[in-house]
Image (cartoon, rainbow, N blue to C red; front, side):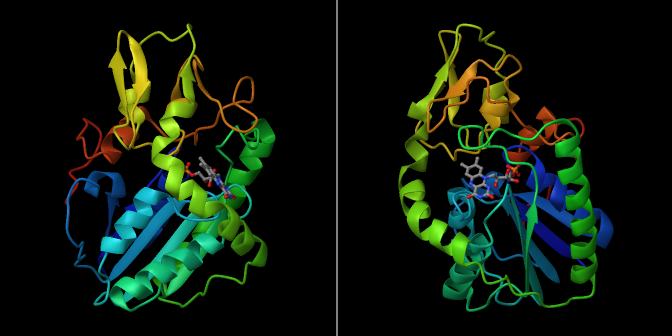
Amino acid sequence: MKTIMYYFTGTGNSLAAARTVAAAIGDCELVPIASLANVSGPVVPAADRVGIVCPVYDSGIPVIVKDFAERLDIGAVPYAFGIVTMGRIGVSALHQLNGILEEGCKRKLDAAFAVKMPGNFPPVGVPPEGKKKEKILKKADAELAAIASTIQKGQAVSPSFAPVSALLQYLLYRPFSKNVHGMGTKFSVEDTCTSCGTCITVCPAGNIRMENNRPVFLDRCELCCACLNFCPVEAIQLNFFHGTKGRGRYRHPDLKVEDMKAQRGEKTATTPEMKLP
Ligand SMILES: Cc1cc2nc3c(=O)[nH]c(=O)nc-3n(C[C@H](O)[C@H](O)[C@H](O)COP(=O)(O)O)c2cc1C
């Protein structure tokens, strides 16, 4: 049974979730949503099962995923599922996804899952470290194994009732989605920058370029924080809310720069051939 899983990730949690489920269910193609951002028109996957896997941003889905979901036509797909990864609260992202799919292709997700994974947004919460981080990841792995089994059986799972998440989405998501592409103006680069270009390589939105040996942020930021969390010398700061100076950084332990390159559709020595539907 063929499955296509579309994913977006900033720091690897959602990619790790997608990979864990893919390994368990088999015959699964992982397609990065960022690699489809510059391809216009509807996306009509030919598969028995389709999944969407992404992080929660401000109790909703990343704007790049929202734009993609609006183009996705899964009307003829027998089984569709969504998995969101989140730091703490965000089930309403699944309700948002359902609303978009219902409007666009007159069907909802058959199964919707929210998995707690380490938070990756230092301006709001210091990312967990050490044993605390390991504990969260271990629990997430167990949940993902159960999710894979549910998908394998083709079972239906509705997203849970989530009043707090819905309220947060109501308050936060509209301003977030309106302003996110301009958030590049909130990043700054310290003199410790070595001009290594990692931030440019890992940005899934292609939002950073090098000028005079310093990264410059353009106007299509997704606020995924890959640049912030990957910078090897922590020279990138995000001047928003509590700021990021000395507030830690996070990346999923399995995530590599090569994975982020592949997310943009760039083939690398270690990425398998990616077929676009
Ligand atoms: C801009 C931004 C907003 C976020 N908003 C939320 C949120 O509303 N609720 C939550 O639980 N986690 C939130 N997070 C944390 C991420 O959803 C979480 O760490 C996720 O697993 C990251 O996935 P990734 O590693 O695939 O990018 C936010 C992260 C970012 C960068």
